[in-house]
Structures are given as structure tokens and as C-alpha cells.
Image (cartoon, rainbow, N blue to C red; front, side, top):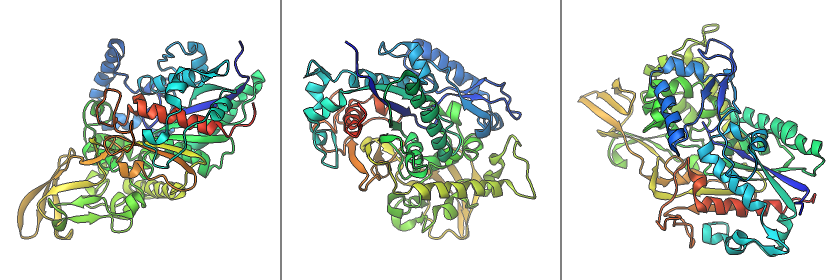
Length: 509
């Protein structure tokens, strides 16, 4: 029996570093045109692990200058040649045409398969199929919805079953501004996704976006900055809605674990890429992060012997500051352009150009502040086992006032040697994350979306509420890790529920 002829395309937008990139062959990047310059490592099997080890080994010997040249926002293109695994839900050639090869296989393609499989098997002969009859009718509050949404009804599911759901991948250049990526995604939807159905003669008027992490900022740019009219709605997963202090950590200390080999193990290697990437910089905490409260704690072990920033403006007080606590302090200026690919023009220093980028970050963050697609469905992690930086702390000797405190040495990995008038030299160290979240995005940012456009907000992990909100598939009271969030049954349930709710707005079947 033929399936529905009316289609609701679902476009999945990955997070930062979740899209494969290739060299455009411009400038002196050290990479040939078409050469893969970024492939997120898949670590879920012997073959993928061996491939990832090879990539890790190649990056081990690449310093800051090489990383900067290869990951130049103006010299990369989306690479559609990545691995594809459809788990038998559709043929590989179809998936390739839908862009699946542009995104990280292990983190994203399983949930893309699940959406394709489950949404196209809602009803048969007027009866609900297994997942929907057993799981789909549960109350969303059981899965942590803080907005007290209603369960799906038979009418909701009958309406949704009138449509076919085709899942597409929306890879994008995550190094450039998310506003620019939003414009690119609109062109992709118009010129590739919806154009496909015009050629086949199938009805498909609007799309649904499903986003992960920074992909949520791209989705908000599509809906709120470019006012795109062909969206039915958006599902946002683990979105740093008001930024993440982890971005500051990476720029000052480097990454931890396996990620440090590719992304950089210290300030020099990370700053060379991040400080030249508008997309990455747009992840810093916004001016309204945590209600505008300060989040950078300087010195001391308790609140009363430390200084807190920002007092008012994070862009001037932290991101553009040349002080030892700045995002890129004066002594790290050399890391802004180690490759020498941005020669000074008209006497502009490297910091002058960096400040221009920070001003653009401010403009982007201000433009999307408290603005979300209509409707928006949110899910996020709020778990004490997945510690995240809701605040940053350079801990050590009390800092009664910032004046008179000077940097002696910075190892670029989280340890500072300081001096202060009347005191012997002392040490400040970057404190571990202690706040609830998903290991990257703190709950205070993941939970920030609010207002009339937000239809549901699912809170998952130890701090969640609801029968299934706290417990994972193994029966443990535990949340999920940021990158792997879509592997969790709670996010999958929230996503499928949200998609059927959004599909209720479709009227072309």
C-alpha cells in the first residue's frame, strides 16, 4: 500500500564541530582543494576507532598556526563525503542525496534513523503501531516537561499519520557566524529540500528543524533574524540558549580528554581557531546569561574574598579586556594570528581586529536575545553527575581588589602565577566544573528559553521532575552527556512528541 503523498521534511542541524568540512583551496591553508580538514571522530566500532586514531595522530603534530590555516572560516566548504549508516531505514543513495554524509555519523544518524522509522509508522488500518500505543500517549510531564503540556491524542496522531516524514541533514560552516549559517540553511531548504518535492510533484510546503547544541542558534537565526516563513516549528536539544562559560575555559585552558588532540590542548592552540571563528565566539555567555548575574570569579575560595565579573558588560569587561582574566589577555595576543594570515591594515593590531569580531558577537547575541521560533520545543540536561561550568573560578589566594594584581606566568592550561603589592607570588588555578548540566551546557542556559513561543521544555537528569525524567535506560538516576544527548531515550521521546505536536500545524495533506 502506498504511503502518504504529502510530506513534512525534517532538517537536522548539528552542533559546533558536527559538520564535516573540506578545504575550499583558497589562501595558503596547507590543504588542497577538496581535502577533508574536519571530520568529527566516530568512536563506536573497531573501524571507526582506527580511523579516529589516524585523525588524532595527524593532528598531534599540528601546532596553532596549522590549525588556524586549515580551519579558516572563509576557506572551508561543507563536505558531504562522510560515512553514512541508515540502519536499513532508507537506502544509502537516498540518504546521501538528503545530506546525511555532511554530519557526524555516530552522534546524529541514529536519531535521524529513529525519526525516519518511527514517524513513518504511526498507524496501520486505523490502529496505533507499537511504539505509539505503548509510549507515545504518555503524559509529557512524565518526561520532564515543565510547561505542563497535554498528552497526544488519537486525533493528533491521526493527523500526523497523513504525512510522510523525510529526514534531511543540514550541515553548515560552524566556523562562520550563526547568522550567516542561518542564511545558508534557508538557501538549502529552498534550493535543495523543497525544490526536490517540486520536482517530484509531492506536496511539501514547510519544514521542521531539529537542532543540537549550537545548531539551535542557527535555527533561531533562521526563524528570528531572517524571518523565514517556511518553518512549521523547531525542536531544540541541549541548546546553549544564553551561551556557555565552557567557551571561556577552552580559550584559556584548552580542551580536555581526546578532544584536546584535535581541538587544542592549551590556550595557544584553541585561541588560534576560536578567536578567528565567529561561530565559536558566539557561544560565550551573553549579557543576559543567568539573568545578567556575574559568572567569572577571580581569586579566593569563598565569595567574600573574591572579585566577580561582569559587573555590567561582559563584552568590555571580559571578552575585549586585555587584563589577565580576559578571554584573550594581552600576553596571548600572539595566539590571535600565529599563521600570519591576517596582515595588519592601516595600523590595525591583532587585538583591533579581534575587538571587531567581539562587537559582531554582541550584535548577534543581542539580536536573538529572548527570541525563539514559534513554536519551539526544548529539551536540556540538568544533572549533577554531568558537571558543567555555570560559573568560572580562578581559585587561590583572596583577591580583595583587581588593581595591583599582576600576572607573572600563564601556562595556558589553567595555572597562573600572580604577584600583588605586599604579597609573595601566589598561584591561581582554574577550578573544576561543579554545577548541574550536561557536561558542557549548564542548566541555567539550557533552561533559559521561555515566553509565549516556547510550547514545551523538558528537563532531564537528577534535577528533573517526572516518572521518566530522572532515570536513564539503564535505570540510573542520571542525565546525559552533551554530545551524545540524542542517544538518550528521554530526548528521543521528547523529540518525537514535539514533532507530532508541530505536525499538527501542517495543512497540505
